[in-house]
Image: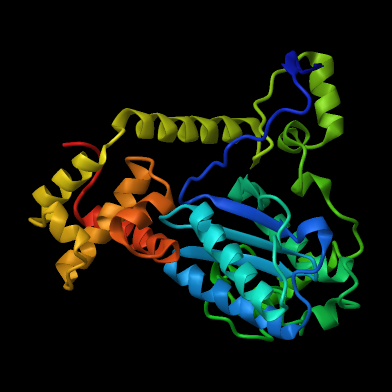
Length: 343
C-alpha cells in the first residue's frame, strides 16, 4: 500500500471496468500483440481505414484525430449515442479476422484490451489532436511536418487541407483557432510545429492522479499540503471533472441493476408497443415494423437485461456481428418509443 494525498492506494489493483458515456471524448490506443505489426502493407491500412469509416457512420462516432502506426493505432473520438465499446469491438474484431485470413495466420492480433481514456474536452482537445498527429514523426515513419502533411494514414493531412475526408471532423478544430478556415489552418500548423521536437507526453498517456492534477510537481505540492484530489486512471481531466464522470458512471450502473429485465419482460414490452408477439419476433418476418421491433429487442436485451451478444444471437437466430448492428439501430428506434425504464 502507498499513501498519496491522504489516501491509501493499493498497487497492482485489478483492472477496472470501462466507462461508457455517450457524448464524451475518448483517446483510444490499440496495440499489436507483443508489439507486433498490425499493418504489413498499404492494403492492410486501406482495409482498416475502410472499416473505420463505415463504422464511424454506423455507430455514430465523431472522429477528431487518428494515426495508424505499424504496430498500433491512435483514435480521438466521441460516440454520440451508443457505446464506444461496441464500436471498438466491431472495428478490431472485424479487422483481425480479415487480417488473419489475408496473411494466413491464426490467434490474437491485438494486445489484451484496447486502452480508452475518457478526456476532459475543453482542457485537452487540441493537445490530444497534436499529440496523436505527431506520432508518425516520432515513430520515424515520416521525416518532418512537410511529409506528415501528405501522409495518408494520419488525420493531420486532412486538417491542413491536403487530403479531403468528409468523415473526419475539422470544423470544430478550426474554430478553436479562427472562424476563417485559411487562417485557422495556419494557426493549427504553428501549434503543431511548436511541439514537433518534444518527446512523448506522459501527461496525455497515463498516471491518473499525476495526470489529473497536472504533473508530479503539482502532486508533490498537494502531498505537502495534505490536499485531496479525485483521480482515476481511466479519465484525463481535473479532479472536479473526474468526480463528475464517476458519478455519471455509477448512476448508469445503478440504473441497469435496478431495471433487471427478464426475456419475458422484453417480449411483453415489445408486444405492448408494437403489437408484435414473441413468436412473431422469433420467426424473422419481413417488414419495417418487424425489423424495428427485433432491433429494439436486441438493444433492450443488451442494455436492460444485461444479456451477452451471443445469447441475443441465439434468440434471434442471426450472427453476433448482425446483432451488434441491430443493437445500434435499436437504440435509435427506442428513443422514438421513449424507452426509459419499465412501465
